[in-house]
Image 1 (cartoon, rainbow, N blue to C red):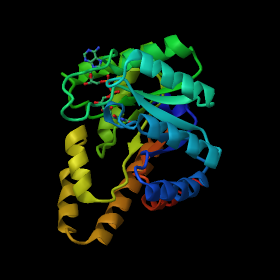
Image 2: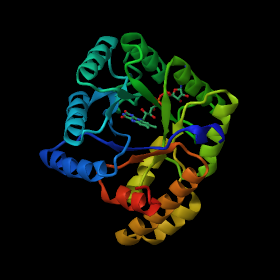
Image 3: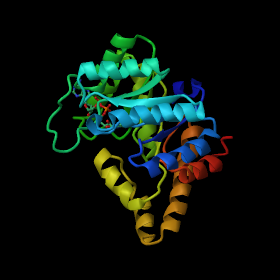
Image 4: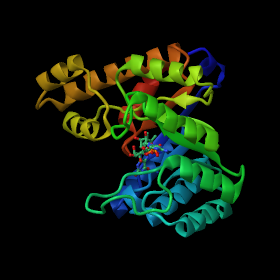
Amino acid sequence: MNSQTQYDKRYSFEFFPPKTDAGVEKLKRVQQELAAKSPSFFSVTYGAGGSTRDRTFQTVTQVKQNTGISTAPHLSCVGDSKSQLGEILQQYVSNGIERIVALRGDLPSGMGASIGELKYASDLVAFIREQTGDHFHLEVAAYPEMHPQAKSMNADLDAFRAKVEAGANSAITQYFFNIDAYKFFVDSCEKRGLDIPVVPGIMPIINYENLVRFSQMCGAEIPRWIRVRMESYSGDPTSVLQFGEEVITSLCQSLLGMGAPGLHFYTMNQSAPTLAIWDNLDLS
Ligand code: FAD
């Protein structure tokens, strides 16, 4: 973990593009509350297979204008042609966007195998560099507990290396609860000479049933001791929130203490759970 301690700590908050007018209004309030913490940047997800192409763009420009804080769109390659991706990149360059979270993405169910021209996130990173040089700071995804479709941890680390070699500047992890998985991932990167910052992705626990569902899809392991406690709070959302806040605060404290270069919060467009953890960490 030594080289990760050399980076200045950075904090970021992730949103998804709202679907309704009420969601848009709610996000305006949430982004103001989180902007008060002066994050390094906000980010806005890109729906599976490009399904939120326009809404991601609108949300990114709205958040940036409304808060004055750098805002990064996520961009995935699996559902878009090179010409579509090129147009999106030019739109972001013209609108003063300087950071992108570059992903392969997942196809919405029913769309079959990969339909884009670029197969992996490393191809997208190379394409962005080819089209726009060093204009963008590029974030990529990292998986301390291994991407669920990877053949092995070594194969996944090779895929991570390909993204770094294609020009990624830093990485954000899938969320995890096993701190050793992060430590071993970072150590493995260091052994391979991959020395970009790997920022832990932090998922506040808001709703246990949703967390179980997401975790099954993305391969994040919920440790037994957390499951056992959470299941004993069934029907008691206050206790779920309270225990979740304690668990995630403790995880963040340990990560920062061991030299993690910052934290990226998956806010789920809610401010209270992230702010509660933030305040416990006494970050500002
Ligand atoms: P890749 O790095 O391309 O890896 C995908 C799989 O292919 C891995 O199993 C990898 O080991 C393998 N692989 C890579 N290269 C090769 C190769 N050359 N040969 C063989 N195998 C290879 N999804 C969205 O749709 N929208 C979002 O906004 C979004 N935001 C995210 C933000 C973060 C921080 C994270 C961690 C994930 C996000 N995701 C998002 C989910 C992500 O799109 C999925 O996890 C997706 O399945 C993989 O994307 P990737 O960029 O990690 O792909």
